[in-house]
Amino acid sequence: MPADFSKASQDIIDRACRAAVAVLEKHDLTVEEMEPLSLGSNILLQLWPFEIVARVTGLRSQILPGGEEAAARRELDAVRFLSDAGAPVLPPCRAVAPGPHREGGLIVTFWDRVFEKDLPDYAPRAWEALRRCHAALRDYAGPMPYLGGYAEARRVFLHLWRTEALDPARASDIVRRLAVLDQALEKMRDDAALAKVPIHGDAHLGNVLVPGEAAAEPVLWIDWDDVCRGPVEWDYACLIVDMREDATRPDREAALRAYVADEIDPVRLDVMIDARALQIEMWDAALESV
Figure (tube, rainbow, N blue to C red):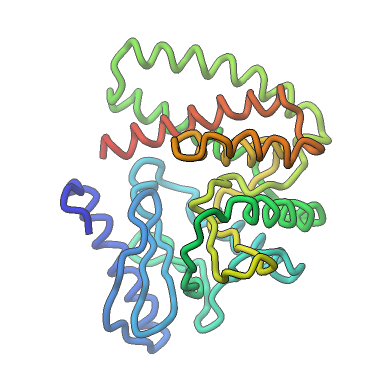
């Protein structure tokens, strides 16, 4: 576990561990050891001796309390639908009720553990798997927010403003950027054909599992708690913003744009890239302030 975690961060990690153990104990399962897999807005814990991963609301619950259970229900419903449709997703846990479970003020869901292969470049397989998920989601009728991740970023900004975590000059710049983006995104929302498309909502390569080396074996998309409706360009913007942080692969963005050229509008994509970059900036600032 990183040594530089703040006391507030360590407290939420401890609460997440207790919550996951308590839920499994109610199912007569005893956890012998926990291994943190991911620590951040959500916390992933490997629960030994079972091949079960607990996903517990983490720092997100301190920054934006409320709404976590509804998001978990949307995620589980959407993933079940996608799994039944044969889409490349990690289905909810089969060994124990996946949830969502409320315990100690936190929300816990359970997922099967997939042990990954270390491949040099699985990005093209991830792009194809995402397209398959998009195709399957077209028939999903469950309720979803419009561009939930961007709407959440606006709430994070208000949290930073109220807690005086931003200096006035930076806050003023963000207000200006939000105004420009709000106008552009609202125009897209008025187009029903764009606003009703179900998408992943947080489609970066960190949300991909690589269970096998064979090229024909699909990778799996995970972490669907930001599933929403909106222009499909949002998901590709998530990928591109993530890629831009990897200086070792400067050609990957151009390859993605060429790969999905038949389904994106370049101007709309650029707006989504700006919106996604602002969302990441807001969350980074919020997590640093905890």
